[in-house]
Amino acid sequence: MLKIDHDEPYEEHYISDILKTVKTIAMVGASNDKTKFSYGVLRVLHETGYEMLPVNPSLAGLKIRGLKVFPSLISINKNVDMVQVFRKAEDFPTVAKEAVEIGAKVLWGQIGVKHPEAAKIAEDAGMKVVMNRCPKIELFRPFWKPKLNLKI
Image 1 (tube, rainbow, N blue to C red):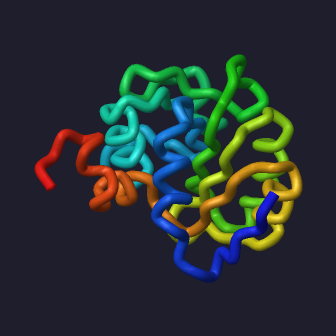
Image 2 (cartoon, rainbow, N blue to C red):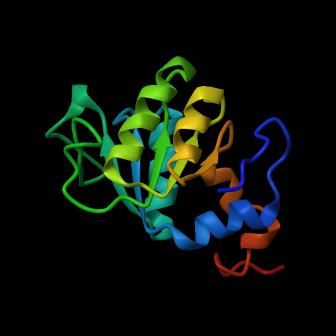
Image 3 (cartoon, rainbow, N blue to C red):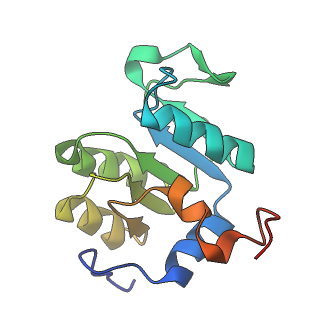
């Protein structure tokens, strides 16, 4: 697998290919607090049509926006295309190992979530990696306007 220089801007096609192909996203660090950024991102991705699987051990068994919250990635009983991470950067390598274990195709670190070891773990397992970016923001870049039925 081609190694990406995560200190350089990602090419549009790299990001758009990921967002066009993933269907199921496990969000590690999901929150039921409507004032938290993770809640807003989950809401927009869910409303855009992605199947969202919130992951948060302290909220396990509860629901966020009607979606069952899982205690861990390992506890999800279905295929996960992408693992999106809303955790501290130092937690990222551990989440990367779990993402590899469940066979996810993409590991995505939210803005502020970047760790070279996490990228190496995931890329060595054949996963695509995005760090320090927000998929909600990426969805509203110009290359997505046709998908969102917005005028160009």
